[in-house]
Image 1 (spheres, each protein chain N blue to C red):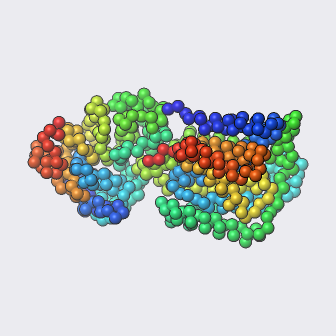
Image 2: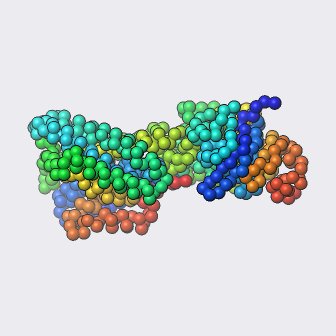
Image 3: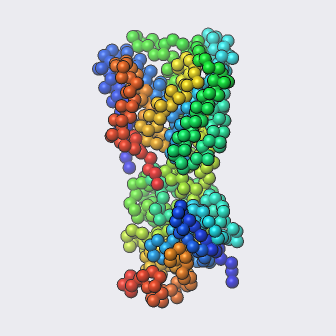
Length: 241
Length: 324
């Protein structure tokens, strides 16, 4: 069995007095899309932030491409080829769309071909290229946040709730973009509340509950097990579409 | 988004408001140039402080130490090169002033580097401790200045070519103030170009908004912050040298005296905004000079009043920086 690209073992995270993650363990296979699911407050965002080094793991081990990254600083983790799209999007509002992308392209000016591909998916970014990002709508900001993560090829993308508050048409574009990234050999770990979106894209799934991973497996198997979904996510049948 | 020019319009508005009150056009021009010169010197001193606050949320009350050290180092160099300072040639004068200013920037920058490592670094994210420890740093620095340079004030005569004034009809414009305006504008232009036209500038602007995300993009914000801190300290040294020549005396308290104006400017401008800092500095300089002429008894409080009025209008300062 090939070694996973990302592997978490016994990861514990504390924020101040609060003990948020209690021994999180799961793997992310290279070239696939793993969905990290769970109810609100299950610890999904904390898991992504801990992988990125934005919050320190108090115990456990995080390995990326065979290397222990548990104690690395955030910039060093990013430089290994991990891109992060936070739930808040964290676009730089005072910078233009262009400047946001220039900053995200560490290797030099953004590649024209890749930029064209991004514009093909997120046309609004081309239209508002010279505008301060703070002027974009919520959906456009989300596009920019994702575009910033994919402006250069990265080995692993950590994306926190990419469809939150988005219109269906933008979600469709997002699905297409993620599918293309997957085909282009990028690996994605996506936190998502929208189960229909998760089901459509995910190859595998890790479901969190109360700061622990309660279930891992293929998305196909999880999608077929409505009782397990009901148990772990509290989903009714009506929420599957 | 349309650029917000309203704060910039305040500068001519304050000037035009003062014109009928001052009465004489010649006096008004003289006061305006003096106000611009004072404002631009404060801007030079304040620009580093606003960026370090914006980048790392560091409240550095010790910034006045870099100003004072700059003034003392520049004074020492200029006194050592007294024959050049007293010569009748502008070029010979500059032969003393330029090395003095460079030495001031170098020593203040080096002091800033040490200050950041020894005093600021242990108190990141702890505002109360930052205020206490950096104020302590300022007091220690003041005492060390007295130990090194003695407790007496140093009288610093301006170089011959920069004494006196240009006379344009009834209008007298001091040569040194004109030079201060030119230097201040050059510093502003250099900062604006760096911040708006270079990747380093983009990083600084992005870091002021959301340092965590800059790190997540793979950039080391700590290193960037140290660089900005050192550059800001060097600029404070330049400002201190200019302020010393402006006052023609240098005392150990020079930093503590001017730091109040520097903080007013930083707050008026919006913490972390260079454009706001520039506008705020000019408003403070102009107001201080007009009020000093019109009502000397209230001059001391005029800048506090200006700050209060601006914060009533825009509670985050003239240009609020969008923080995460």
